[in-house]
Amino acid sequence: MIVKVCGMTAADNISEVAAAGADMIGMVFWPRSPRYVAQVPSHTGLLPDAATLPAAAGGPRRVGVFVDDSVQDIITRVVNFGLDCVQLHGDEPPTMLRNLRRSIDPDIRPGIKLIKAIGIGGAEDFGKCAEYEDCADLLLFDTRCPGAGGSGRQFDWTLLDSYRGSLPFLLSGGIGPGDEERLAALRHPLLAGIDLNSRFETAPGVKDAAAVGRFISRYRRCLAAESPAQSSLLSHPSQNSQPSH
Image (cartoon, rainbow, N blue to C red; front, side, top):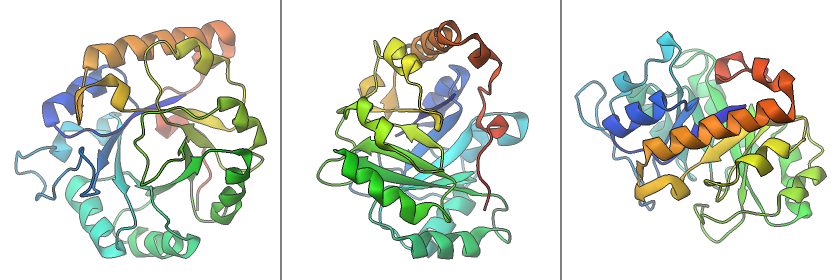
């Protein structure tokens, strides 16, 4: 199972969370977020420097989070931050994802993955997923709320039974310490992992790496206890079976 830690803003903290076992590191490029990462040239030593995330050495994948941004702005950050994945957390239509992929892959970032976030408040919200079947690699189910997510609240996880699509998904929204056993007990066949954020923060954009590490260790122990076969499954997203486009 993938563990993604989102809303990271500082290079040292990113390194600590990566060492704690995160498979994906998320950086938010939405100016209205308290976890906004300002645009800086790469390899300048400013935060977060892409060099802190050695993807070639098997480190966590770098995910850029965008909300209704332009293709050009996204491309600029893909290049400057060495992004492996783009997460679209607004009202982006499928045509935007198709245009974005054509603009980036293969000329700029071959094999880049696109993640589309869907706000979930009721079973009817899963109907939106079908629109992205042919243009996204992964979905992310967050709690539906005004704005672009980040409520820190959980939706009813039993609603996941209503998802009948073909794309794998990450579960997000208010996950925190104490949720490990309930998460490990989830049985949806397309659940690819989980997304952690505000409930592990000491300040917006600053994660308690020790708490993240304890959570990841306990979550993976719970997974192994629920299903011993889980212990042989991937702990790094590059080993996951995900659709390619």
